[in-house]
Length: 125
Image 1 (cartoon, rainbow, N blue to C red):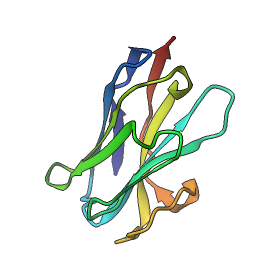
Image 2: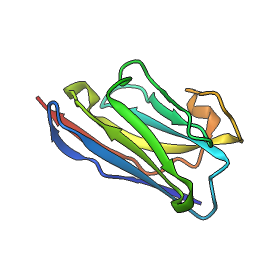
Image 3: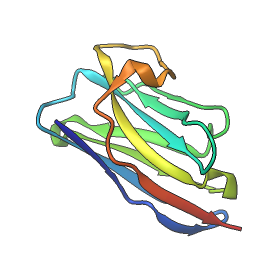
Image 4: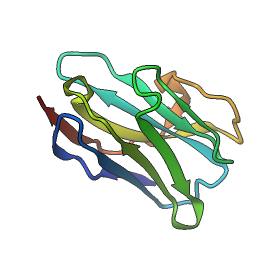
């Protein structure tokens, strides 16, 4: 089972980027998907969660700017990031919820399995 996040890069202040998370090895259609980020020298923090049914939840710091989505047929999840700020600079990782069919958000990284290799987003000021 593998997850791979991609789509990061250097973005200007106020710009946008869409991250992708490709899952392989099994289907995750019944599981929520989470996005987390870790900035240099900081703890990993929750960014977004999308339930198996498509309900979305966001950290207050990104609410209104980021949008999560998923395509179960393709075993993919996405994070569209708009109006980017320098403080959004971090390595972004996707992960699969441990619990089948969870409908409420969990921001605890320990509730996730199958962490993918992250992708770096750098926002220039």
